[in-house]
Image 1 (cartoon, rainbow, N blue to C red):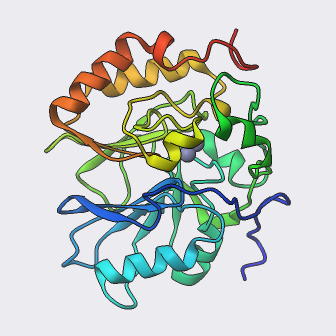
Image 2: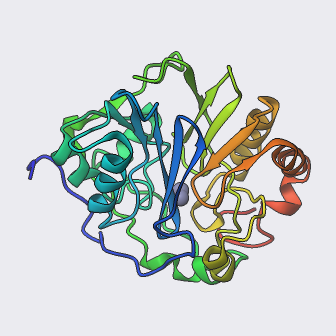
Image 3: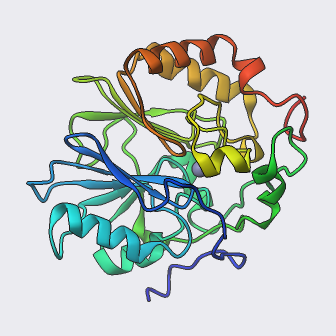
Length: 281
Ligand SMILES: [Zn+2]
Ligand SMILES: [Zn+2]
């Protein structure tokens, strides 16, 4: 293992799941979403080429699953050209070190997320008291110490360019985390959201388990800047995406997406912002 890289000292497997765990689907011919326990990863690129990237890196302990899903789709021995992180929360970087060691590929994140990925800064503690459900109450057990990817982590270019995805641009969507990004493709208005909004009520253990579709703001227990989060949802709504792949929950498309996203942007304070919690004022 690369000595430069290490997870935080509280890194561990989290025993939680959903009925979607282990399930994959081609949302578009070149966007494949796969669910690991409660979080999604995406493989972006045509399966008949070897040019593709991985967006986000799953839960702790999921490297073997991610590698086998990748090889099933792109062929034995295939590897992405890069890994793009929407942000650095534990459920999006859970297998990153094993993946980098196995594939030897660069990882990209927004410049404001870099301190959390180079061991310099930890995210604020998750808020177990936030209005919500059982997952929020479980959140103190989530790994929160910063990981260190050493010089394997690279800064996304400042002009919105997404390395190896020429048709996409990244949109800075802070609030859930300072350097959170979403990826947007103008040609077909495909949006890879990350956690700027999600399609499952992530705080509720029951809804996470059943993956009942319901548009929701960013997961509450880890969101610390609700004003920025509101602006980010408005920014994404203005893009009028035709399909949204979110960090948690099932993909949403067409009128269902338009209606729900319009509603979320309009009524963000009542739908997304918790009525109480330590990051609400
Ligand atoms: Zn997150
Ligand atoms: Zn997440």
